[in-house]
Length: 279
Image 1: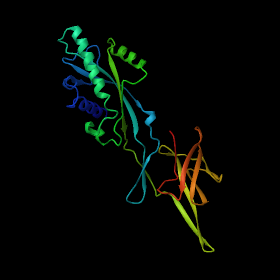
Image 2: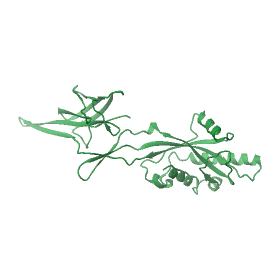
Image 3: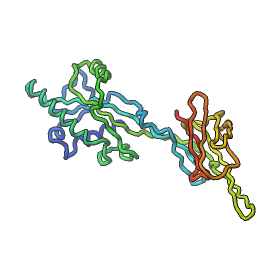
């Protein structure tokens, strides 16, 4: 997947609408160490760090209904921020002073071009990234500065610091992991007819999970009403005798703060009463 991101960035920099010098420059993803010496003008994108983007973390797994009426639960995609150190390298045949000017000019063109794209448009996405549900967001020349990581990068590469840009792109990584589940208990309904009127009483049931794992022994309290139960060995709970309306499930599990989940009775969808705890 990271190679597909490299190819997508290359396509973005090679676009026909990009500044001519930027478009004609070579695009390299090699490590710019002490022996790195490109033979022509080059934009180097060194992938120096990969980490989860916690701000874009999605804790809710997806649920897919199967043909047999059962359900499959899949973990949400992992949002991964890929940070590149972008440097520019001039034609080595030029005089030293001209190389500095040419490198600065190319760096400015790269900044101006990349800042046009808060996300990588779908038309540039290559390989496995072509199906990304959300276009990968980008951050160029991150505000704040003072990134000590760049200092250590130069030290590790064994070269003197160069003018550079920080380019961060967040992609979604999916995993071929699915857990089969039986049909969910959503709502049971009992209608009582009294003196010409009909009243509906519901029983709701769900499962408390952390990621894909059920959480037994969690306390689930219903508001309003104040009823409270503890999940069984499969992480399941139920509340009988409820009227239609909006409720809140306050869940306490060992090792983390209480969470609150709003539900509506009767349920509009399957698994609507499940509680998904943060990781």
